[in-house]
Length: 448
Image 1 (cartoon, rainbow, N blue to C red):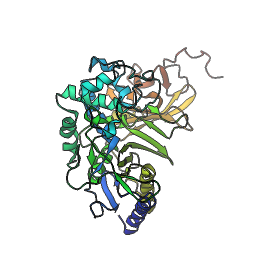
Image 2 (image 1 turned 45 degrees about the vertical axis):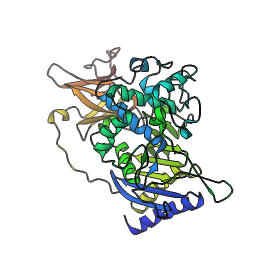
Image 3 (image 1 turned 60 degrees about the vertical axis):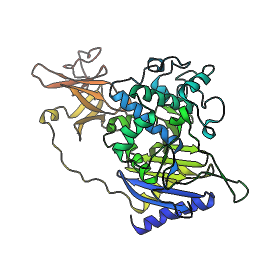
């Protein structure tokens, strides 16, 4: 980056470290799938922390566990609508679905019974299930958002049962290794920051514990560095490295439930936290463990993300800092639009493009890069979706109103396309074309 951009970013980071009195802090900006900038302030072992200094990730761990679950789904080993009982029999909350566990809509209790799990040595799976025998479900599954750390302890066990090894070994083999995240581990290794609480009324520190969480570890055990977390931020933005398809990661980023009412600013997809602010729609996660705060957010549409790691229990505005770092980067170095280039198109598809009518309303059907179609009103708001081919003259909706719906091309006796059948709605080349199978028929006297 330009020196002026780097100075602006470092200045913002320095302000956060100083004003929030955090012992140390590391941040980074990710652009187009690559680490574009990183910086550190404060001291770790007498030195300024860097991109290779480990901090605890907290709940960012959940996004890796969710990815392991989605890999199982993509392999056909489970369906997101499966009840938990089908895969982990014998619990008191087996009616919750896997999708509900991923999106924090299972109704499960937020925390495991007994001592505060983040500050005490964790028990094994059998002990966790026993502790949840009575009253584990606080709300009707599917009724509303209710953040559940317990739910991710459960998902970790689900992954372990299917793979025949611990959730951690699965994450190492299937995610960390392929993505080159060599400095992500369950406990600190090499250069790392110790966790502290900062006294609210004096410039004093109190060391915080970091025990192994046992069966609750999938909710927040992992440690990582800015370098590794930058790779993970890029992953959530669509640079998946083959660990998942881009389509599956995009599915994880889709809104499932909102956290804050009618006009949402935060919510959850499938294991991924969502934030909407200043025209951006961001995906990632925050993390909080005793002595540590972390945040990773990415704007997949703009190709930019940011991350923050700090060793303070509270008081650091990690989410706003991520947003500010992204905004500063784009203010100082706005991204250049990609060059338009012509693409190779199947000539047979060209006859489908152009003007169609849903009743009297005109629509345009356009070819998009990658062999997709876009169907949208010619003017103003309305139902618009993209479609992907699934067979001869058959397409499936990818987003918006027609997501998952089937579009079929209808042809006349000469083989020329004369209508589109989209979820029972008929689109014709001219408004209410009597040659098309318009539902309810067309008045025989026509327009008059």
